Image (cartoon, rainbow, N blue to C red; front, side, top):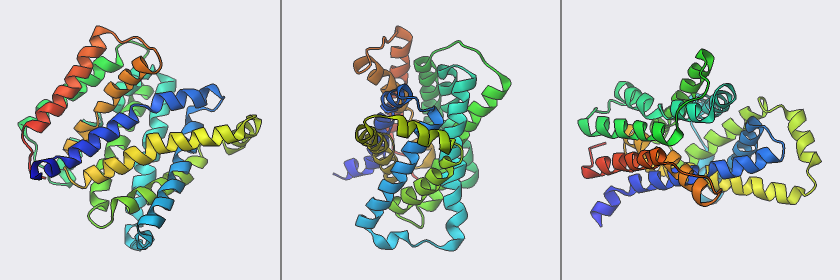
Length: 296
């Protein structure tokens, strides 16, 4: 029982990664309806913010109270991490191939490990390094090679990895004072509000108005927010509360492997031998981290 509890944080983070892996299914459908990737992100973030607020209202109304001195921390979580990472990632996809953008996004564990050593005083271990190398190599193989590469695209792509990784760093600081429910609520309310300004609101409203079955659209947006944001981010934040930032970042690399499997089983996409090897490497990284639980 104690051992299961000891690994609960790891399990929650891995499950979060599996949920994130389904994102492509939802994004593609909304793209097919005419929404840009940034607009899809806006719909997802705003809806998730509202849902997180409702969850906090039910779980702990007192959780809405935060110290004014911590407002910059929540602004960093919402804007510098979630919104910045989202905008950088979708911009990288536009400037380069999707696979190249994905590879750069998954430099996030490297960013997290370096920043965690500097700001969280986490120890770097051989176990972490081996797991990190296996995970990154696996992500590269799963995402594929080739495609155009530009200097601006690479910088923006690295920015997405940094922004994605910063959630683990800022989140660790926030969780020292607040519950995971408070952290996710304010993070997504702020990110959702900020996303409105970059989603071309007049065009977004026009596209929503042009959809014939609005009830179906709203239902799908709600499902998108629940499956790709509310459940995984809540699980990840709960998991982050029980393990180290560096460890969490490596475990979350299960996402691209899960995305490939979702593409195969749900979308009918083909999976090559190289991608299969990549998936095996990602799970090998998780196995390495499971060999011995390091102290947080």
